Image (tube, rainbow, N blue to C red; front, top):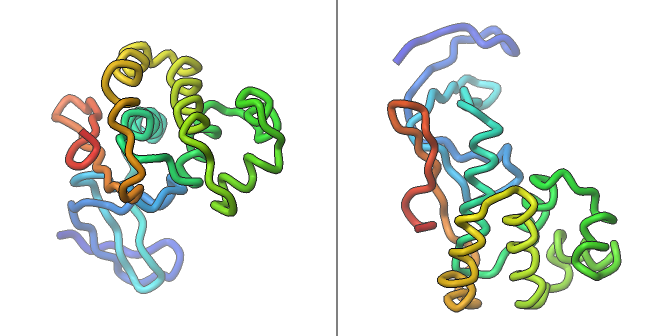
Length: 168
């Protein structure tokens, strides 16, 4: 454990290697395993390794999970595809207000919309193995059970990322 001065408040902060609740993703259910986490009186931050690669791994985890997507997860996948809500709505075949209600969890999306969103993202991002897995394994297993699955992103010694724990 090292001590350093915070750039914001000027007080000492502590550095620890630990699992980090990755709220910066916009999701409540993702952690990054064993990274540097900094804490001081003004808050907590972390050294996020390879944020674009982590975003890609999160999208893959969401695509292949066996519970329905939440509104925040739909928003994450839409943004991962770099689509505006109106473009996404057009692709899904609904109006912009419907996408907004899904993402803000004001209205539930249908099981068909859930599958189409996953498939659309997998194809858009070139996740060919995940498309095959969706069609052959995941779609038959999706159940309306607890959608609050917890996910952990880990990096091996070479920096390769993978989803671990609850999502596989």
